[in-house]
Length: 194
Image (cartoon, rainbow, N blue to C red; front, side, top):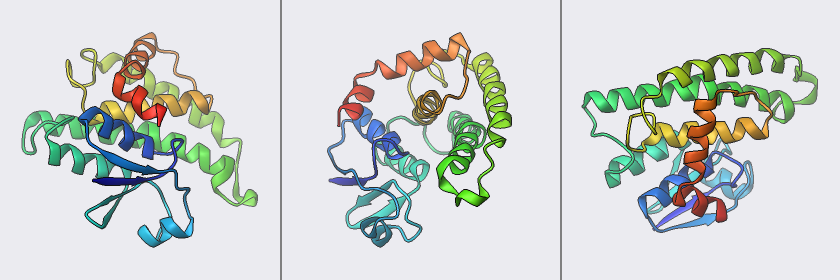
């Protein structure tokens, strides 16, 4: 059994959603970052942490990739062109959307107050909107890779939800429809209900 640590409002949600998509049994602790319990599992104090057979795994993308490869779901096989494209999408979403949102969050609450630069958020919102426009033109089907949900959908879906909470604009109708499809999935709803 898997034991996932991390709050619903963190990147742990990505792992919860993936586990629900895969139909895997897991235990969840709503553990906050930098608590003694998390630091014992992950010295950098970050969540999520997935404990597998007593071994802690860290970083949401590494955990997602491990689970997808282990269970043969939400992914294409390693060494295939489809997998390379899938990994390219995942990295692009992480670099251009997740990174932008996290930079904004650090300047809201993550950095010491004297180091925060709230004015940076104007350029970050612009950058986020530009990336949304590019992604909207690249979607090939109901999901990033066509007709089947894969890891980059989990990451992008999470980022779009995070953006809405953070008031980052994504005015692309294609992405609004895409996000609504993801949120309507039974696995997404099951993760949210936890």
